[in-house]
Image (cartoon, rainbow, N blue to C red; front, side):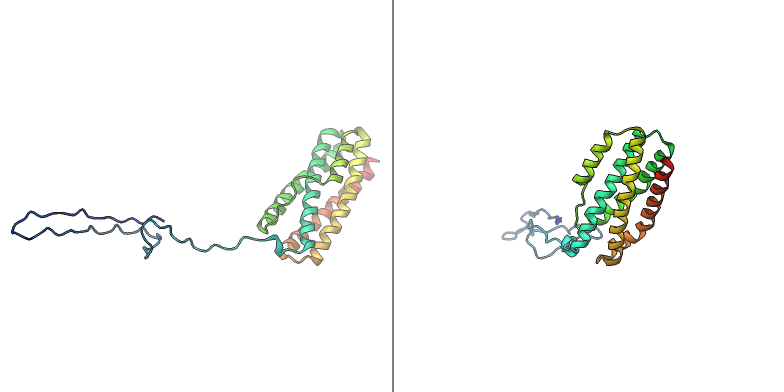
Length: 205
């Protein structure tokens, strides 16, 4: 913080009597604005010592299981949204289209919440599906009609069963309270998705 000092100019008084010189005076310093750092003994021009800041969050504070949960949950959530967007474009079945929109509506804010939570804890979660999920999506791109619908819903059943297992594991055995709470509050949503996928698959057969 810059220190502002005002200095009065030296004023020389005329010599009224022999041997007498004028006195030098200094103007009063401008008061510091409220909240400004008070002047110290630091020499003018020297940088002020910054106030200590809180230590940033470190992923080292999380267990290996917590970190793995964040990675897998982020990859799975992103895959869900991207597959649902694909289904919206490819399916002609109104039921499948409705299910896909539900996946987008539910997983998008859930993914954003997980990213925010992970970032606060010093983690950088994945921003795309894992290699296996990407291969599956490439395969799905080559399907159409009823074959696409059946493959999409069958994949959703499998994916949500795996997701439900991971989230229940974190809710029960996770060590980070925030991640445990996130998993716990998401489990009912995953269960609803699984039930919908199973019902829609039966209806589409």
